[in-house]
Image 1 (tube, rainbow, N blue to C red):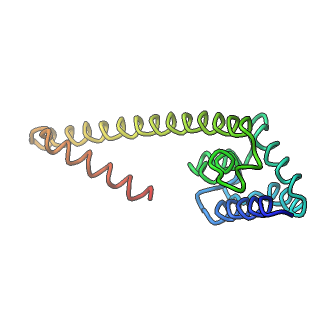
Image 2 (cartoon, rainbow, N blue to C red):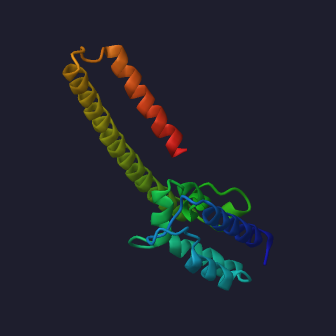
Image 3 (cartoon, one colour):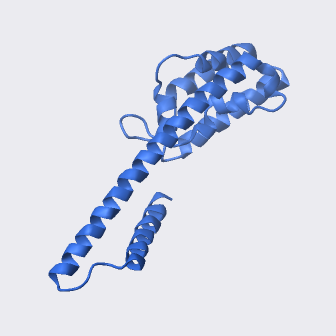
Length: 171
């Protein structure tokens, strides 16, 4: 196998290993996703560089959802997807793919990044709504105890503390 194909194989295996090592990437059953189907497909083609390139091109052109793609999407790890690899490839891997391949990869990543952003905004809106319910409950308790409602400064402090707690929990 020539240098470009060997470099591609090494990069594919690196991405698979990174997915395997990331506990946030899980399959539909909830266990750590490591891509057994993809690994077998790559292993089958490891001595045939052109077949390996064709496999990646087929993955780019897949229709419908795949468990691997969904696992990467849910974990916000599209940075280790084959689409990312093709779109951001440098030499010698870049020369194995054409502009159409890169356009397909860019489209897939763009669509999914928009979905990730939509989900994040939805989650953030839900969290903010919960935070405001907590503030309302705090005010209710304070009023029952004969105290005044929270000041704007106290509200800001509570919101800030809750957001900081979520950031710590996330990461």
